[in-house]
Amino acid sequence: MSTQRAGRQGDAPDRLVGQITAAYGRRYDVETSAGVVYSCVMRGKKTGVACGDQVEFLHTAADQGVIETILPRTSLFYRSDAFREKLIAANVTQLVFVIAAIPSFDLELLDRCLMAAESQDIQPLILLNKADLIEPSQAARQALGVYQALGYPLLEISARITIEPLIPYLSGHTSLFAGQSGMGKSTLLNALIPEARQMTAEISDALDSGRHTTTHARLFRLDADSYIIDSPGFQEFGLHQLNEQSLAWGFVEFRSYLGQCRFRNCRHLAEPGCAVLEAVQAGAIHSRRMACYHKLLLLRGSIKR
Ligand SMILES: Nc1nc2c(ncn2[C@@H]2O[C@H](COP(=O)(O)OP(=O)(O)OP(=O)(O)O)[C@@H](O)[C@H]2O)c(=O)[nH]1
Ligand SMILES: [Zn+2]
Image (cartoon, rainbow, N blue to C red; front, side, top):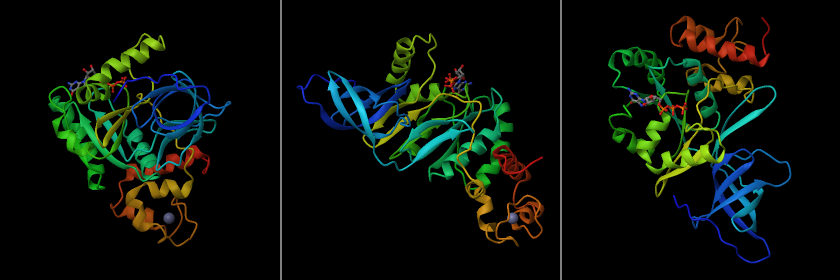
């Protein structure tokens, strides 16, 4: 990715198009197809722009701009609770969910990220990092077998040893790297894109955060048609944006049973003749996944307990 900055181009503000390559605070780096980077803010008090978004902006001064319009997106990966939305990345085609045996991982976060990806037609890839930790990885591999059986690709890797096996999976995609803190996202990214380490340090310095860790989403070019968006680690992932139907649809193994229940408006809780519950009883749907669905309904306030 070029780090060339914009120069002054006359008095009348030009209207330009570019892509958000970094989102920090209320400032955004926007890169044009010519590889020029502008530091932009949103017009007025508007928010709602994410790393990866294509935007129209006015070139106001030197390397500065004001974002006027967010162009239509192909996808938006985000989380939300009852009060606010946290946009993570736009226009991604693949979610690379990074997980590792150590520190301990939370499968519910994986379930939730899969929901968010499924609802936006983003293709998931589960990346089990730290495969060099042989014993602990054994247990993780077993736990992740459930997802493999659902058809989700699972790749084992050790970022410390080599990231070579990951490269073919990234080709032609805009991949979002997401996961809990400490799973090795930064190590992976630094191995894939050596200048990423420097950029993370620069942002930390600019924000005076004193921590050289991923605090904001950032887009990197891997090759001519492959991009990576790195995102800060998270410990929770709300899905308030998804209604009951979208939640049920997000569990891929429910899909063939949806529409088969006795009641058309079945919520798959305890209704008689529920095809999804019958599939759980028959062992065709994992009870932990069903429990996760019920918990998500409970959190939405859709069911009372
Ligand atoms: N054994 C082993 N350790 C690894 C591997 N990859 C990363 N680590 C270690 O795991 C720790 C966390 O790695 P990071 O790359 O900082 O993790 P992160 O997911 O970016 O964490 P945040 O920046 O907090 O989101 C570091 O001590 C790494 O050296 C690996 O393949 N094997
Ligand atoms: Zn049902």
